Length: 260
Ligand SMILES: O=C[C@H](O)[C@H](O)[C@H](O)COP(=O)(O)O
Image (cartoon, rainbow, N blue to C red):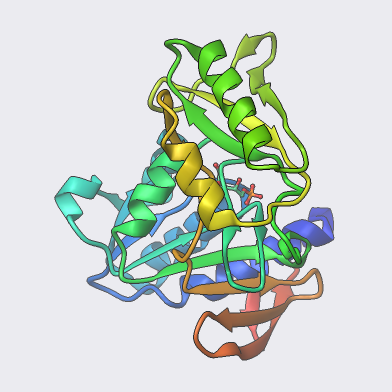
């Protein structure tokens, strides 16, 4: 079964499996969205079913909520939880300061709200997501449908005034129709190439009327767990740098990496 997994999936799985061990009984846990977060949810489901782990999860999208319920996780809303012990989520890019670009799957708004309402945000990612400077991955910006083209023009003008390198913005599509987020909004992807000042750009974008939120997560992530295709896992902490390395071994019969 594992032979069917690509090295990138093995890397995502390794990071997710390692992160799942951070969840303890009684915790309130933010559950991210995307392919890496989906591995996490499956690993947590296994711990619930087979090890008796009991925790409540706050999903960051309808698709994560569906998967979490399917694998046996108790799902509650953020307002029921009020505050979370930990949020574990994927990312599209992370830099040396653990700042992130998120929203490749369109879930950035709920993800940012949930991560910000957590004692700790842990990102799980394959090593290819690490960048020196954010911006190669198009920056997702969530905008309301009303006045979409006006908001797009305002965003482009803002990028010009900020002297940002790339200024092209594209409306995310779902086939031949615009993509809709869980909140019924659209996503504009900003092709910037390189972001000089992520904090400033994040603030300026959010001041544009029509913009709901952007995919820059600045000073939100506490820890990144990086997975590699050979099962190696490295943990980087915002305060302590690289804090641990581990090696996971894949069990060919059940699609599970086991700690050596
Ligand atoms: O909206 C989606 C999220 O921000 C994801 O966490 C991000 O796009 C990473 O997804 P993946 O784990 O599939 O690369």
